[in-house]
Image 1 (tube, rainbow, N blue to C red):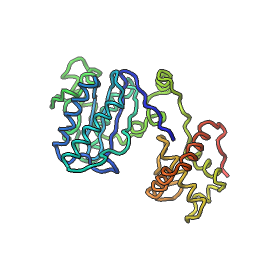
Image 2: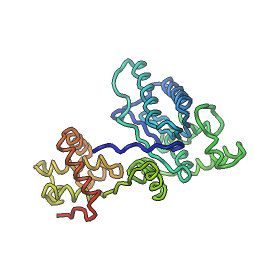
Image 3: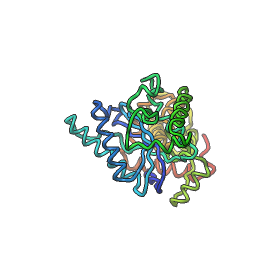
Image 4: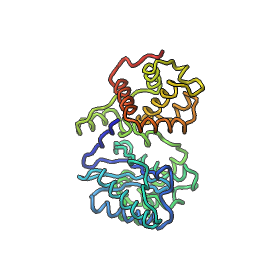
Length: 316
């Protein structure tokens, strides 16, 4: 399937996630993290963007970026390329450092920015790395508390939402952050609320898509994926879920996995549970489908059918 175009307009705010290739580490020393700080500063100065929050984990990065006139794609390309060159040089290695394209979710800052900043800064706490956010040195939390100076990190905008007095704002932010310690993983911050690329209300989504002359795509459920695949391969859902490696059931499961992987609102783990299959096996099957031109065309056709046919495909 063709990738959806990035949404860009001046002052847009994004939750950006960069992950290590195949889940591998992207930092090998504190020097690497400080180098990324310098790259962040360079990006802020060169592209006139703002970074409102960040967290550097061992194998992935969270950033809240607000763009100016220059699109996010140019900013992230510069950051990822410069950091990859540094790691390859310092580690005497070659090849990709990051896993595919970065993940970017456009957010309604008025509704979600405060909670998103807290969520990102509490990432090490949720991961069990530290007991409190101020114990983790590689996030923007310390700067928000006034304990660290990071000239490339914009803290005043978020802090101003708490108070016009700097000291009171920091105390209020700290209390707000502590209130979120018990919060679990939020799928909306990872996948958005629309098409895996927008986090906001229906009104916000429609306004943004209209502004950039794009249309909202109709989402489809996991049950609809399974039913559609079954109809195409002329099998029942019971046959799809049955044990064994007979065709066309194996091919149908592979296509279903490929469709799920192209849908940001669906998860392969959920498909694995429904089908009673190992998630790694489904992932490999989906990769096989992605490597075949005819199979990719079939996936696109089935997705288009689910998005445009209001009646959908009935179960056999």
